[in-house]
Image (cartoon, rainbow over all chains, first blue to last red; front, side):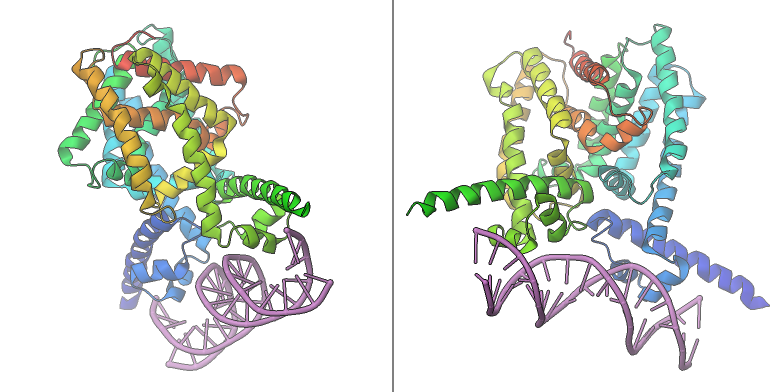
Length: 208
Length: 208
DNA sequence: GTCTATAACGCGATAGAC
DNA sequence: GTCTATCGCGTTATAGAC
Protein backbone atom coordinates (compact mmCIF):
# COMPACT_ATOMS: atom_id res chain seq x y z
CA UNK A 1 0.00 0.00 0.00
CA UNK A 2 2.69 2.51 -0.91
CA UNK A 3 0.03 4.58 -2.67
CA UNK A 4 -1.70 5.47 0.58
CA UNK A 5 0.96 7.90 1.77
CA UNK A 6 1.27 9.38 -1.68
CA UNK A 7 -2.45 10.11 -1.89
CA UNK A 8 -2.44 11.78 1.50
CA UNK A 9 0.45 13.93 0.38
CA UNK A 10 -1.43 14.91 -2.78
CA UNK A 11 -4.44 15.85 -0.71
CA UNK A 12 -2.36 18.01 1.63
CA UNK A 13 -0.63 19.80 -1.23
CA UNK A 14 -3.83 20.40 -3.18
CA UNK A 15 -5.89 21.67 -0.26
CA UNK A 16 -3.05 24.03 0.62
CA UNK A 17 -2.89 25.27 -2.97
CA UNK A 18 -6.66 25.77 -3.05
CA UNK A 19 -6.77 27.62 0.27
CA UNK A 20 -4.02 30.01 -0.77
CA UNK A 21 -5.67 30.67 -4.12
CA UNK A 22 -9.07 31.15 -2.49
CA UNK A 23 -7.69 33.66 0.02
CA UNK A 24 -6.27 35.72 -2.80
CA UNK A 25 -9.32 35.69 -5.05
CA UNK A 26 -11.88 36.13 -2.27
CA UNK A 27 -9.93 39.10 -0.94
CA UNK A 28 -9.56 40.78 -4.31
CA UNK A 29 -13.03 40.23 -5.72
CA UNK A 30 -15.21 39.62 -2.71
CA UNK A 31 -17.24 36.53 -1.92
CA UNK A 32 -20.10 36.94 -4.35
CA UNK A 33 -17.99 38.09 -7.28
CA UNK A 34 -15.66 35.14 -6.87
CA UNK A 35 -16.45 32.06 -8.90
CA UNK A 36 -15.08 28.62 -8.22
CA UNK A 37 -13.62 28.88 -11.71
CA UNK A 38 -11.59 31.94 -10.72
CA UNK A 39 -10.14 30.11 -7.74
CA UNK A 40 -9.44 27.01 -9.83
CA UNK A 41 -7.57 29.11 -12.34
CA UNK A 42 -5.52 30.79 -9.62
CA UNK A 43 -4.75 27.40 -8.07
CA UNK A 44 -3.96 25.91 -11.48
CA UNK A 45 -6.37 23.06 -10.94
CA UNK A 46 -9.50 21.97 -12.81
CA UNK A 47 -12.65 23.44 -11.39
CA UNK A 48 -14.23 20.13 -10.38
CA UNK A 49 -11.19 19.32 -8.35
CA UNK A 50 -12.11 22.10 -5.95
CA UNK A 51 -15.53 20.58 -5.42
CA UNK A 52 -13.82 17.31 -4.62
CA UNK A 53 -11.93 18.82 -1.65
CA UNK A 54 -14.48 21.45 -0.59
CA UNK A 55 -17.96 20.43 -1.55
CA UNK A 56 -19.39 23.95 -1.62
CA UNK A 57 -18.11 27.48 -2.06
CA UNK A 58 -19.30 28.29 1.47
CA UNK A 59 -17.25 25.48 2.96
CA UNK A 60 -14.12 26.71 1.20
CA UNK A 61 -14.78 30.25 2.36
CA UNK A 62 -15.21 29.18 5.96
CA UNK A 63 -11.98 27.20 5.81
CA UNK A 64 -10.09 30.29 4.69
CA UNK A 65 -11.50 32.41 7.52
CA UNK A 66 -10.87 29.74 10.15
CA UNK A 67 -7.16 29.90 9.32
CA UNK A 68 -7.17 33.66 9.69
CA UNK A 69 -8.87 33.79 13.08
CA UNK A 70 -6.21 31.49 14.53
CA UNK A 71 -3.48 33.77 13.26
CA UNK A 72 -5.13 36.86 14.74
CA UNK A 73 -5.41 35.22 18.12
CA UNK A 74 -1.64 34.73 18.07
CA UNK A 75 -1.21 38.51 17.80
CA UNK A 76 -3.02 38.94 21.10
CA UNK A 77 -1.06 36.42 23.16
CA UNK A 78 0.76 39.39 24.71
CA UNK A 79 -2.43 40.06 26.68
CA UNK A 80 -1.79 36.84 28.56
CA UNK A 81 2.00 36.87 28.60
CA UNK A 82 2.50 40.36 30.00
CA UNK A 83 0.74 42.60 32.45
CA UNK A 84 2.14 46.07 31.88
CA UNK A 85 -0.27 48.01 29.63
CA UNK A 86 2.57 49.76 27.83
CA UNK A 87 4.26 46.47 26.96
CA UNK A 88 1.04 44.68 26.01
CA UNK A 89 -0.33 47.40 23.76
CA UNK A 90 2.98 48.21 22.07
CA UNK A 91 3.43 44.54 21.26
CA UNK A 92 -0.18 44.08 20.13
CA UNK A 93 -0.18 47.10 17.85
CA UNK A 94 3.10 46.10 16.24
CA UNK A 95 1.92 42.54 15.69
CA UNK A 96 -1.34 43.63 14.10
CA UNK A 97 0.34 46.26 11.93
CA UNK A 98 2.82 43.61 10.82
CA UNK A 99 0.04 41.27 9.76
CA UNK A 100 -1.76 44.07 7.95
CA UNK A 101 1.37 44.48 5.87
CA UNK A 102 2.54 40.90 5.44
CA UNK A 103 -0.83 39.22 5.06
CA UNK A 104 -3.52 41.77 4.21
CA UNK A 105 -5.73 39.38 2.28
CA UNK A 106 -7.32 37.67 5.25
CA UNK A 107 -8.15 40.98 6.88
CA UNK A 108 -10.01 42.08 3.76
CA UNK A 109 -12.07 38.91 3.66
CA UNK A 110 -12.94 39.35 7.32
CA UNK A 111 -13.90 42.96 6.76
CA UNK A 112 -16.26 42.11 3.92
CA UNK A 113 -17.87 39.39 5.99
CA UNK A 114 -18.48 41.86 8.84
CA UNK A 115 -19.76 44.56 6.47
CA UNK A 116 -22.58 42.27 5.40
CA UNK A 117 -23.38 40.88 8.83
CA UNK A 118 -21.44 37.61 8.65
CA UNK A 119 -23.78 35.87 6.20
CA UNK A 120 -21.45 32.90 5.75
CA UNK A 121 -19.86 32.53 9.18
CA UNK A 122 -23.23 33.01 10.78
CA UNK A 123 -23.85 32.13 14.41
CA UNK A 124 -20.58 30.23 14.96
CA UNK A 125 -18.96 33.63 15.17
CA UNK A 126 -20.39 34.64 18.52
CA UNK A 127 -18.96 31.54 20.18
CA UNK A 128 -15.43 31.99 18.89
CA UNK A 129 -15.07 35.76 18.87
CA UNK A 130 -17.07 37.14 21.78
CA UNK A 131 -15.44 35.34 24.74
CA UNK A 132 -12.00 36.00 23.26
CA UNK A 133 -12.66 39.74 22.91
CA UNK A 134 -14.28 39.97 26.34
CA UNK A 135 -11.06 38.76 27.97
CA UNK A 136 -9.16 41.62 26.36
CA UNK A 137 -11.78 44.13 27.42
CA UNK A 138 -11.62 42.80 30.95
CA UNK A 139 -7.89 43.34 31.15
CA UNK A 140 -8.22 46.92 29.96
CA UNK A 141 -11.01 47.49 32.48
CA UNK A 142 -8.71 46.25 35.23
CA UNK A 143 -5.94 48.63 34.14
CA UNK A 144 -8.41 51.49 34.43
CA UNK A 145 -9.66 50.33 37.84
CA UNK A 146 -6.09 50.09 39.13
CA UNK A 147 -5.34 53.57 37.83
CA UNK A 148 -2.62 52.32 35.50
CA UNK A 149 -4.22 54.00 32.48
CA UNK A 150 -6.65 56.89 32.18
CA UNK A 151 -10.35 56.04 32.30
CA UNK A 152 -11.51 55.02 28.84
CA UNK A 153 -14.26 52.79 27.55
CA UNK A 154 -12.41 49.46 27.10
CA UNK A 155 -14.34 48.34 24.03
CA UNK A 156 -13.82 51.71 22.35
CA UNK A 157 -10.07 51.50 22.91
CA UNK A 158 -9.97 47.98 21.51
CA UNK A 159 -11.92 49.09 18.44
CA UNK A 160 -9.53 51.99 17.89
CA UNK A 161 -6.61 49.57 17.84
CA UNK A 162 -8.34 47.11 15.54
CA UNK A 163 -9.58 49.79 13.18
CA UNK A 164 -6.34 51.78 13.04
CA UNK A 165 -4.16 48.75 12.37
CA UNK A 166 -6.47 46.86 10.01
CA UNK A 167 -6.97 50.06 8.04
CA UNK A 168 -3.57 49.47 6.44
CA UNK A 169 -4.81 46.14 5.11
CA UNK A 170 -8.49 46.83 4.40
CA UNK A 171 -8.00 50.31 2.93
CA UNK A 172 -4.60 49.56 1.44
CA UNK A 173 -5.79 50.74 -1.95
CA UNK A 174 -6.77 54.11 -0.50
CA UNK A 175 -3.51 54.37 1.47
CA UNK A 176 -1.52 53.71 -1.69
CA UNK A 177 -3.61 56.23 -3.62
CA UNK A 178 -2.82 58.93 -1.05
CA UNK A 179 0.88 57.98 -1.15
CA UNK A 180 1.36 59.22 -4.73
CA UNK A 181 0.08 55.89 -5.99
CA UNK A 182 3.04 54.02 -4.49
CA UNK A 183 2.73 51.37 -1.76
CA UNK A 184 4.12 52.59 1.56
CA UNK A 185 7.88 52.12 1.80
CA UNK A 186 9.36 50.20 4.71
CA UNK A 187 10.32 53.54 6.28
CA UNK A 188 6.91 55.12 5.79
CA UNK A 189 5.19 52.06 7.22
CA UNK A 190 7.44 52.12 10.27
CA UNK A 191 6.49 55.78 10.79
CA UNK A 192 2.85 54.72 10.69
CA UNK A 193 3.47 52.03 13.32
CA UNK A 194 5.20 54.61 15.52
CA UNK A 195 2.39 57.13 15.12
CA UNK A 196 -0.40 54.66 15.87
CA UNK A 197 1.49 53.36 18.90
CA UNK A 198 2.35 56.82 20.21
CA UNK A 199 -1.16 58.22 19.81
CA UNK A 200 -2.79 55.23 21.50
CA UNK A 201 -0.32 55.13 24.42
CA UNK A 202 -0.36 58.85 25.06
CA UNK A 203 -4.11 58.78 24.56
CA UNK A 204 -4.51 56.59 27.65
CA UNK A 205 -1.91 58.47 29.68
CA UNK A 206 1.24 56.45 29.02
CA UNK A 207 4.61 57.53 27.66
CA UNK A 208 5.40 55.90 24.31
CA UNK B 1 -48.26 71.24 -21.45
CA UNK B 2 -49.19 70.79 -17.82
CA UNK B 3 -47.86 67.25 -18.02
CA UNK B 4 -44.28 68.45 -18.31
CA UNK B 5 -43.95 69.51 -14.69
CA UNK B 6 -45.74 66.42 -13.54
CA UNK B 7 -43.34 64.13 -15.39
CA UNK B 8 -40.32 65.92 -13.95
CA UNK B 9 -41.77 65.47 -10.51
CA UNK B 10 -42.31 61.76 -11.15
CA UNK B 11 -38.71 61.45 -12.29
CA UNK B 12 -37.40 63.23 -9.20
CA UNK B 13 -39.44 61.09 -6.84
CA UNK B 14 -38.56 57.82 -8.55
CA UNK B 15 -34.82 58.46 -8.80
CA UNK B 16 -34.81 59.39 -5.11
CA UNK B 17 -36.67 56.19 -4.24
CA UNK B 18 -34.29 54.13 -6.33
CA UNK B 19 -31.17 55.75 -4.85
CA UNK B 20 -32.35 55.18 -1.31
CA UNK B 21 -33.26 51.58 -2.02
CA UNK B 22 -29.96 50.96 -3.81
CA UNK B 23 -27.97 52.38 -0.90
CA UNK B 24 -29.66 49.98 1.47
CA UNK B 25 -29.34 46.86 -0.64
CA UNK B 26 -25.79 47.53 -1.86
CA UNK B 27 -24.69 48.11 1.75
CA UNK B 28 -26.33 44.99 3.09
CA UNK B 29 -25.45 42.52 0.35
CA UNK B 30 -22.47 44.04 -1.41
CA UNK B 31 -22.21 45.09 -5.02
CA UNK B 32 -21.90 41.69 -6.70
CA UNK B 33 -24.53 39.96 -4.58
CA UNK B 34 -27.02 42.72 -5.29
CA UNK B 35 -29.35 42.23 -8.23
CA UNK B 36 -31.35 44.95 -9.91
CA UNK B 37 -34.38 42.88 -8.91
CA UNK B 38 -33.48 43.21 -5.21
CA UNK B 39 -33.25 46.97 -5.53
CA UNK B 40 -36.48 47.13 -7.50
CA UNK B 41 -38.27 45.17 -4.80
CA UNK B 42 -36.88 47.44 -2.06
CA UNK B 43 -37.92 50.52 -4.08
CA UNK B 44 -41.34 49.00 -4.84
CA UNK B 45 -40.88 49.59 -8.53
CA UNK B 46 -40.77 47.18 -11.47
CA UNK B 47 -37.28 46.10 -12.35
CA UNK B 48 -37.27 47.57 -15.84
CA UNK B 49 -38.13 50.93 -14.38
CA UNK B 50 -34.70 51.04 -12.78
CA UNK B 51 -33.07 50.49 -16.14
CA UNK B 52 -35.08 53.39 -17.45
CA UNK B 53 -33.54 55.84 -14.96
CA UNK B 54 -30.10 54.23 -14.60
CA UNK B 55 -29.15 52.30 -17.67
CA UNK B 56 -26.71 49.97 -15.93
CA UNK B 57 -26.05 48.66 -12.44
CA UNK B 58 -22.66 50.40 -12.47
CA UNK B 59 -24.23 53.76 -13.19
CA UNK B 60 -26.66 53.37 -10.30
CA UNK B 61 -23.83 52.33 -8.00
CA UNK B 62 -21.72 55.32 -8.95
CA UNK B 63 -24.66 57.65 -8.35
CA UNK B 64 -25.07 56.28 -4.82
CA UNK B 65 -21.38 56.81 -4.00
CA UNK B 66 -21.29 60.28 -5.50
CA UNK B 67 -23.97 61.34 -3.00
CA UNK B 68 -21.96 59.90 -0.15
CA UNK B 69 -18.68 61.60 -0.98
CA UNK B 70 -20.41 64.99 -0.93
CA UNK B 71 -21.81 64.31 2.52
CA UNK B 72 -18.42 63.25 3.87
CA UNK B 73 -16.83 66.41 2.61
CA UNK B 74 -19.34 68.36 4.68
CA UNK B 75 -18.00 66.67 7.82
CA UNK B 76 -14.57 68.13 7.13
CA UNK B 77 -15.60 71.74 6.58
CA UNK B 78 -14.28 72.45 10.09
CA UNK B 79 -10.78 72.13 8.63
CA UNK B 80 -11.46 75.31 6.68
CA UNK B 81 -13.70 77.10 9.17
CA UNK B 82 -11.43 76.83 12.21
CA UNK B 83 -7.73 76.87 12.89
CA UNK B 84 -7.31 75.53 16.42
CA UNK B 85 -6.42 71.81 16.21
CA UNK B 86 -8.46 70.99 19.29
CA UNK B 87 -11.58 72.62 17.84
CA UNK B 88 -11.11 71.19 14.35
CA UNK B 89 -10.49 67.60 15.42
CA UNK B 90 -13.18 67.52 18.10
CA UNK B 91 -15.69 68.76 15.56
CA UNK B 92 -14.50 66.41 12.82
CA UNK B 93 -14.55 63.30 15.00
CA UNK B 94 -18.03 64.09 16.30
CA UNK B 95 -19.36 64.74 12.80
CA UNK B 96 -17.93 61.51 11.45
CA UNK B 97 -19.12 59.47 14.43
CA UNK B 98 -22.55 60.99 13.97
CA UNK B 99 -22.68 59.93 10.35
CA UNK B 100 -21.47 56.44 11.22
CA UNK B 101 -24.49 56.15 13.46
CA UNK B 102 -27.15 57.99 11.49
CA UNK B 103 -26.18 56.88 8.00
CA UNK B 104 -23.92 53.82 8.16
CA UNK B 105 -24.97 52.40 4.81
CA UNK B 106 -22.89 54.67 2.62
CA UNK B 107 -19.79 54.02 4.67
CA UNK B 108 -20.18 50.29 4.15
CA UNK B 109 -20.52 50.68 0.40
CA UNK B 110 -17.41 52.85 0.34
CA UNK B 111 -15.51 50.32 2.44
CA UNK B 112 -16.34 47.45 0.12
CA UNK B 113 -15.34 49.49 -2.90
CA UNK B 114 -11.94 50.24 -1.29
CA UNK B 115 -11.45 46.64 -0.19
CA UNK B 116 -11.55 45.53 -3.79
CA UNK B 117 -9.49 48.37 -5.21
CA UNK B 118 -12.29 50.64 -6.44
CA UNK B 119 -13.31 48.46 -9.40
CA UNK B 120 -16.40 50.57 -10.16
CA UNK B 121 -15.29 54.08 -9.25
CA UNK B 122 -12.00 53.49 -11.00
CA UNK B 123 -9.68 56.32 -11.86
CA UNK B 124 -12.18 59.15 -11.18
CA UNK B 125 -11.40 58.54 -7.53
CA UNK B 126 -7.88 59.94 -7.54
CA UNK B 127 -9.10 63.27 -8.89
CA UNK B 128 -11.84 63.77 -6.32
CA UNK B 129 -10.30 62.21 -3.22
CA UNK B 130 -6.56 62.85 -3.33
CA UNK B 131 -6.48 66.68 -3.49
CA UNK B 132 -9.18 66.88 -0.84
CA UNK B 133 -7.26 64.62 1.56
CA UNK B 134 -3.96 66.35 0.85
CA UNK B 135 -5.38 69.66 2.10
CA UNK B 136 -6.23 68.04 5.44
CA UNK B 137 -2.79 66.47 5.69
CA UNK B 138 -1.21 69.82 4.96
CA UNK B 139 -3.09 71.50 7.79
CA UNK B 140 -1.96 68.82 10.25
CA UNK B 141 1.62 69.15 8.99
CA UNK B 142 1.45 72.90 9.67
CA UNK B 143 0.20 72.31 13.22
CA UNK B 144 3.22 70.08 13.79
CA UNK B 145 5.63 72.59 12.27
CA UNK B 146 4.23 75.36 14.47
CA UNK B 147 4.57 73.16 17.55
CA UNK B 148 0.84 73.23 18.22
CA UNK B 149 0.62 69.42 18.33
CA UNK B 150 3.22 66.74 18.94
CA UNK B 151 5.12 65.48 15.89
CA UNK B 152 3.06 62.77 14.19
CA UNK B 153 2.83 61.51 10.65
CA UNK B 154 -0.14 63.54 9.30
CA UNK B 155 -1.50 60.80 7.05
CA UNK B 156 -1.32 58.25 9.86
CA UNK B 157 -3.30 60.54 12.17
CA UNK B 158 -5.93 61.11 9.50
CA UNK B 159 -6.23 57.35 8.92
CA UNK B 160 -6.65 56.75 12.66
CA UNK B 161 -9.56 59.18 12.70
CA UNK B 162 -11.18 57.74 9.61
CA UNK B 163 -10.71 54.15 10.72
CA UNK B 164 -11.80 54.67 14.33
CA UNK B 165 -14.96 56.55 13.42
CA UNK B 166 -16.01 54.54 10.37
CA UNK B 167 -15.49 51.36 12.38
CA UNK B 168 -18.84 52.00 14.08
CA UNK B 169 -20.52 51.91 10.66
CA UNK B 170 -18.47 49.33 8.76
CA UNK B 171 -18.07 46.88 11.64
CA UNK B 172 -21.42 47.69 13.21
CA UNK B 173 -22.37 44.03 13.17
CA UNK B 174 -19.26 43.15 15.18
CA UNK B 175 -19.80 46.05 17.58
CA UNK B 176 -23.34 44.89 18.22
CA UNK B 177 -22.18 41.30 18.67
CA UNK B 178 -19.70 42.40 21.36
CA UNK B 179 -22.43 44.49 23.05
CA UNK B 180 -24.45 41.43 24.12
CA UNK B 181 -26.08 41.40 20.69
CA UNK B 182 -27.76 44.76 21.29
CA UNK B 183 -27.04 47.88 19.20
CA UNK B 184 -25.14 50.51 21.19
CA UNK B 185 -27.44 52.67 23.28
CA UNK B 186 -27.33 56.43 22.92
CA UNK B 187 -25.32 56.60 26.15
CA UNK B 188 -22.85 53.90 25.11
CA UNK B 189 -22.34 55.55 21.76
CA UNK B 190 -21.68 58.91 23.41
CA UNK B 191 -19.04 57.21 25.60
CA UNK B 192 -17.44 55.90 22.42
CA UNK B 193 -17.36 59.39 20.91
CA UNK B 194 -15.75 60.71 24.09
CA UNK B 195 -13.15 57.95 24.16
CA UNK B 196 -12.16 58.32 20.51
CA UNK B 197 -11.93 62.10 20.90
CA UNK B 198 -9.97 61.93 24.15
CA UNK B 199 -7.47 59.33 22.91
CA UNK B 200 -6.81 61.20 19.67
CA UNK B 201 -6.44 64.62 21.32
CA UNK B 202 -4.23 63.41 24.16
CA UNK B 203 -2.35 61.29 21.64
CA UNK B 204 -1.14 64.43 19.87
CA UNK B 205 -0.48 66.36 23.08
CA UNK B 206 -3.76 68.25 23.56
CA UNK B 207 -6.15 68.33 26.47
CA UNK B 208 -9.57 66.92 25.62
C1' DG C 1 -43.67 56.61 -18.47
C1' DT C 2 -44.82 51.56 -17.27
C1' DC C 3 -44.37 46.72 -17.42
C1' DT C 4 -44.25 41.89 -19.49
C1' DA C 5 -41.59 38.71 -21.96
C1' DT C 6 -37.42 37.08 -23.45
C1' DA C 7 -32.70 36.96 -25.12
C1' DA C 8 -27.90 35.96 -23.95
C1' DC C 9 -25.00 34.67 -20.64
C1' DG C 10 -22.35 32.88 -16.45
C1' DC C 11 -22.82 30.51 -12.31
C1' DG C 12 -22.62 26.37 -8.73
C1' DA C 13 -23.02 21.84 -8.50
C1' DT C 14 -23.04 17.04 -10.10
C1' DA C 15 -22.96 12.68 -12.87
C1' DG C 16 -20.14 9.58 -14.77
C1' DA C 17 -16.18 8.14 -17.80
C1' DC C 18 -11.35 7.57 -17.07
C1' DG D 1 -8.03 11.11 -7.53
C1' DT D 2 -9.04 13.62 -12.11
C1' DC D 3 -11.69 15.87 -15.54
C1' DT D 4 -15.37 16.58 -19.23
C1' DA D 5 -20.05 17.45 -20.14
C1' DT D 6 -24.25 19.09 -18.65
C1' DC D 7 -28.28 20.46 -15.83
C1' DG D 8 -30.88 24.03 -13.67
C1' DC D 9 -30.95 28.44 -12.10
C1' DG D 10 -30.41 33.46 -11.63
C1' DT D 11 -28.53 37.41 -13.70
C1' DT D 12 -28.34 41.93 -16.72
C1' DA D 13 -30.21 44.11 -20.30
C1' DT D 14 -33.52 45.00 -23.94
C1' DA D 15 -37.52 44.79 -27.19
C1' DG D 16 -42.03 45.93 -27.68
C1' DA D 17 -46.99 46.06 -26.14
C1' DC D 18 -49.70 49.17 -23.37
